[in-house]
Amino acid sequence: MARDYQYNYTSLMPSLFNSDKRIKKADTIVRVCRDFAHPSDLSQLNLLDVGSSNGIIDNYLADFFGQVVGIDIDEPAMAHARETFHRENLNFHTGDAMQMSFPDNSFDVVVCTQIYEHVPDASRMFSEIFRVLKPGGFCYFSGNNRIMFMEPHYRLPLLSLLPRPLAHQYVRLSGKGSHYHELHFSYWTLKRMCKDFTIVDYSHKVISEPEMFGVDYMIKKGSPKWRVARFLAAYAKWASPMMWILQKPAPVQTAAG
Image (cartoon, rainbow, N blue to C red; front, side, top):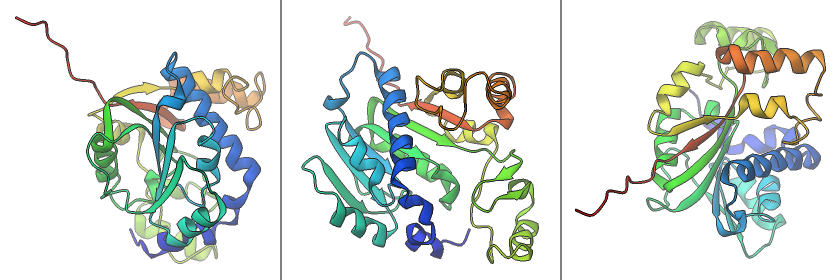
């Protein structure tokens, strides 16, 4: 995977500056974390956002979590975030998701949303997330799998299913770029990559109750789209977007002998 585009990705994607959409995305993160961590007080937890972009999401998360740290390899995005958002419990670092500088067991919560496909080695990224999470801590993970009709970055049907050489050609012929940079994996491959975590699949729960989790702006309960999405999340996970909680197991407590 060519990586040069990642160093300036935010500036290439104006949609990442849509505050309304970014805040709605952040609100869903908070709602899912609250639902999973209940009755924990989120304000007592520190959070790392992997692939934090321009800081809009992290600025919102800082209203709920004790400390929020954003990390991204995109230095211009990090500079924008540092210049725009000033809060005592919010910090931004330029860094690589595959080789983070944080010590082991540093964070209660990690957020990794729509990021894995942009990373050259997603398996290494998941290993790093596991490493920096505290035992018992969890990662809010969301992403598309390879089996989808419409590729979201280029809006080209079936692009993610093609072998890489054909995918590059497809992108070039469409006039939408010179390479297909993103690399999506199947549901089963992602499960293998996350085998060290305990996986709690929130996809069906969130789709079933869109108002509860703040996604009703994308999918209305009772609509045909909702019925199809709910069916896929329940019975065809291999063809559904993923929203997982990845929990790092806590050490097993043994009775004193």
